[in-house]
Image (cartoon, rainbow, N blue to C red; front, side):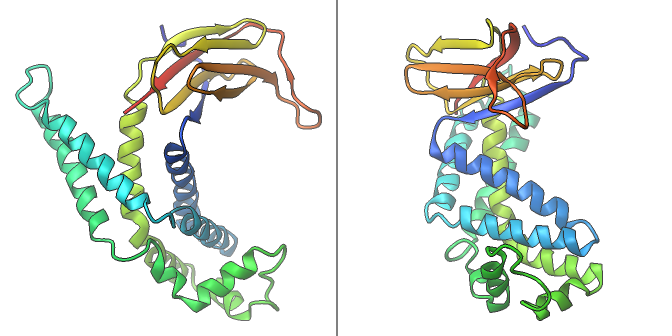
Length: 259
């Protein structure tokens, strides 16, 4: 059973291994970078550049590209096994296979360490180093950067597109993997009595847990899990005090996702 239609819900996701945790972080940072890069203002473009540096740090893992290529190939083989299945749309299957193959090709075309071209740009690295210092990118610290922020917005957008563009194959690949992961589970309706919920996994394998909670519930899930059990504690949100567990019964939708 799903949450009633018409109710505004918030989806919380909890990764159960480091690989999925990395992909979720990258997804979030890419979304912010592209959002602010598409704007016109110098402050937005500064945020786009700072978040680009975050992508560089997170995506700098030597095995990330290999992991994505390997996972895409595994998913391609799974999809190929559905060929000639009367219950599967051949058009949809061909489209999914084409998307995976294009993404794999783009990843394999990336040469060297991820983002190395950014590391070799001394001007960008000077900004990156100063950005880690509170107030470290004032005009008197980096006058050349201040000049860039005062350039025509279209020129700044073009520069950002040139710096972000070579990393987009990673975004495309992780988007495919996360989309397949999120669609792999079957939602279950659950209730946390007095804000507490526990479920034994009993051998169930999952890489990601998704909770959908109605916005009407003034409650935030704190999720923890190991190979034996999933624990969820709903707390009352409070920006001034330490959160405490709610006394209300909270109905929510729970999905275990696994590729």
